[in-house]
Length: 113
Image (cartoon, rainbow, N blue to C red; front, top):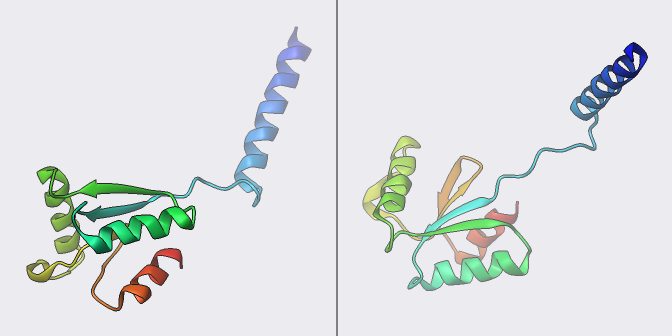
């Protein structure tokens, strides 16, 4: 019985050590967060672009959710972004915030970099 318990302990320790040091074991990538509106053509085009590229994202319609609108504005303010002229969609890419305030094709390229 002691031998069985010892073998289990060694296997668990080995598997934990291997998963922490193995470069092939990766953490799950955080999906993009998109704050936008279903009536915004740039937001709709952004969602289509991401779907075509098989990029995972979460979309929050700020017209339907005041809490998500406030969340977006707080994130922008916290990151020093002027909220007096917000352009949709606003993207949260692993904590890096940007919005569609340049050429739309350049904006889309930023999503896949």
